[in-house]
Length: 101
Length: 145
Image (cartoon, rainbow over all chains, first blue to last red; front, side, top):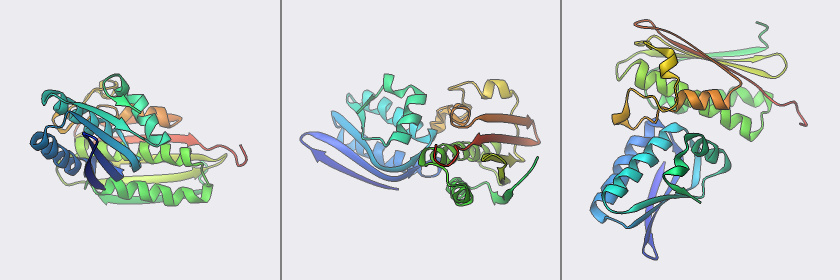
């Protein structure tokens, strides 16, 4: 699993690649939280194009970062999930809280 | 039960073995040539069940998880994930969507919902203090479907 955060036209984009499961979610969570708390971005996009596997641990990860972004006065959105990851996202109903494009 | 092929793997309850379990299932299923979607569904369901055993069954303590994968007639896949952890007090409640006993770990409470949605059949048997056995089945589409 790899995380690369870039600033693109005033929006922070977190490119995550590899697999998101319970085993690696904790590391991802602490890296993203460190970035959110230190940089306080207005907009954070989590780009899932490079994700090859995600189970419900990814839902917890996204929901937790969405809450933290809100607390810090920003907004989180999710971009480019693969079709089979979209199914997990849809099942969770997370699109009611987080914008998925 | 008429078993065409079977693999049984026992692994310690380490979170890294969530990925190991997915890899074992993927390798075994190659012989059945599942679609990308079918394979993804099964891998996700297995990941959820093994994660439940690691996070809720053993709760950070050491134990073993037994994974059994069987190829049954008519392209049916049988999967059993068995732990000897603390067990579930109320299986019905545990299977309710969004129910979790580990919100501090950001568990979404969707594990059983994912297993139910992505597989054809799901059975959960548990005894407090003895452990939990999750059994799942899925029939793969016929070649050319």
